[in-house]
Length: 286
Image (cartoon, rainbow, N blue to C red):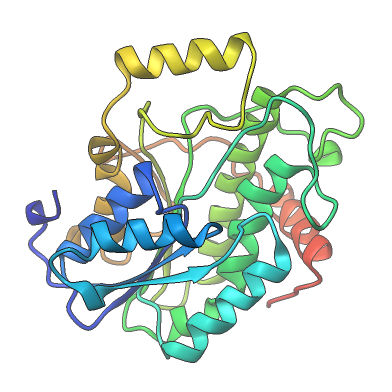
């Protein structure tokens, strides 16, 4: 798939989360094929090594695996510090890791797990890698979002007031990730760093592994019958990360290699969510 792009990523560094399987692995595969040094995270070292062996088959030194759980802030900080220690610049950051849960669960930091994984994780990792991103010639951040997006209630981001609904929590988290995309794009508007959102479409992945019940069964069945392969799903996020024609394009929402309406961009809502994320991670970047 990477061969479609007339671009040589030799000498560049790319970070891809959630790349031990599925969509993230195919995004990472495309970046490796184009010549990038690719850093992936793994909660389970064995899964990480298996992914490294697969991705680095032709270029064994091209893939680095570092431990990180994207729902755990301490883990994210350690990962970001390790990336910064190894590389003065990061040219591509793909925030791909995501999950949904049928029952309400909490992260190591006491946050609702969907929100911690799909919103706080990419927010904190991006914030912690801003310096190496700014140090690159023209860095790109790509947030992998979803066509499933909605149920956003800034006053109840963790479903402490509403009855917990895993699917609604997921839809809200993906709406929030779009808002964070607009926030970082605005913050970095006068820098060489672009920040965009990319939807992969309906893909056959392990995305449902943490969910049970009728809805999860239906989604699994539909994915097997109608879902695109992970390689096909990886196409738009990879395109957003590397295509030279998108140079300088920021704050956009892409689906099927096409820019589309990314939904609400109310500045007050964007600012409010960003502040809430800063408060929950005690990071403030201006």
